[in-house]
Length: 107
Length: 125
Image 1: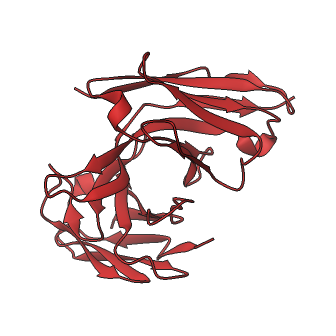
Image 2: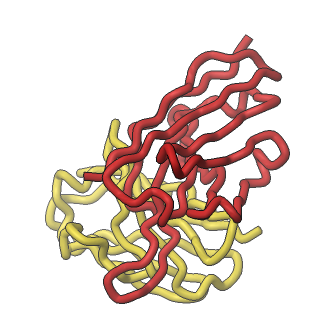
């Protein structure tokens, strides 16, 4: 099965900073990659699918890129409400594996 | 408004069984694949199982294959997860999630655009 590895596992940045999170697949998955945000105590929220397509209602400061095995989630200007754990997920075929998560905090 | 309401969680002994339900509303249930995703306390998300809209296809994580069975009743707009031979490592919040399906450009995405609030399953003696 394809493994999904996220880095870093956690990061701390200042409000207004650009933040990037990486997700690597152990085999190529084309662009079948989604990103989710889970704020503390809440259910996961879909941010991006098809590696770079923003889900309706998601702020434009979020963006995704990549194809094949290497993917990136970027937050162009970190806001306090972005404090959350972010997960990538592959969906080219079952199993629909999630990455281990990246916890984003405000410095 | 899409709503997903899980039920059936609770405390069960190792080796026991439990059936989770997810009542769906606000969309044409039979037109969408549905999934179960779990999250152990303080841990990350783990995909468990997915079933197609027609129930023709079902898929499982290796960790639950042979022990869990996903099913759906489209006449009742309800998704189920039958969990047998439960282990301590199955302890988690279990979320029901709706697959997005086709977007406005015709792209099919088996990603999860709506999630329930979850139901807690605790496996302990």
